Image (cartoon, rainbow, N blue to C red; front, side, top):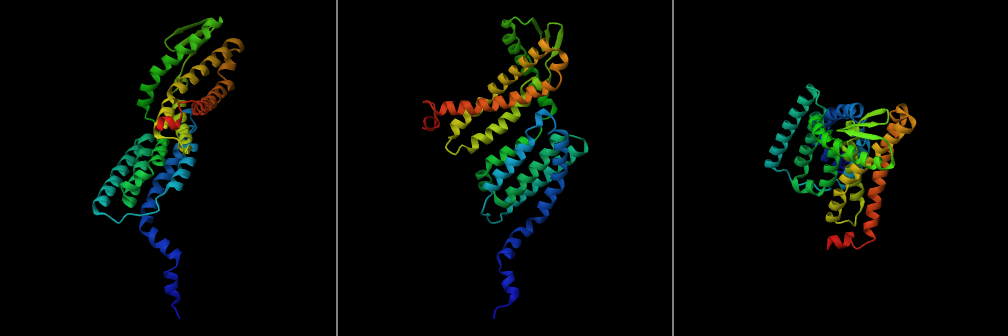
Length: 296
């Protein structure tokens, strides 16, 4: 007769517990620093237009990572463990600095680096490279630093202001542009950072990359080409957004242009930009410039 205790020890649940038990302290530590950071992102970043894609990226990124999660674990390696520990220490330092001095970008980067260090220490570089896309995709959860936003929005605001003026002017709408200030009839409009295109661009890139990833038949060259189109699509979409706001303000007044319809125009144009990307993909697939041809 077999020993009941031996039977329990040899059960699949016992083997699974033995497999995960050494990693529980790291997983708990990641949860302790990650959950408060996610809560802060939800409160301070995801409620803004530039971070509105956050919940979508988090949900779809976890789903992709779950599907691509490595099933094999390389044997422990001393050098790998040392590099992983160095990654833990560096990431924790970045996290603490960002948390202490209220830099949400650094705080989120520390959590992200902590997770990467854990995956490297557990699976090794070769296994991480196999799941590079979900790890890269989850990186869109990291909010852009303020200086990046400032440097990126300035030229984009100038560009979309010029494009919007060029579109509206031929239709007889009295408009005058000075930098990013638009004078439309009796109204004066200022093209702010939210209308520059950078906010929509980040979300468009993230969601479109998810769409491209799901295209199993797409080659990496085709995917790269489609991703490159995201920048002009985002710029054109935001120029059209400003055109809508100009027309709303000129014909219905400043209260309408800056009120509820101002937010609605942003959401509408974001949806239009996504549909435009999907349409471009379907159009290209029907011509010679197809995924198969590019892959050849």
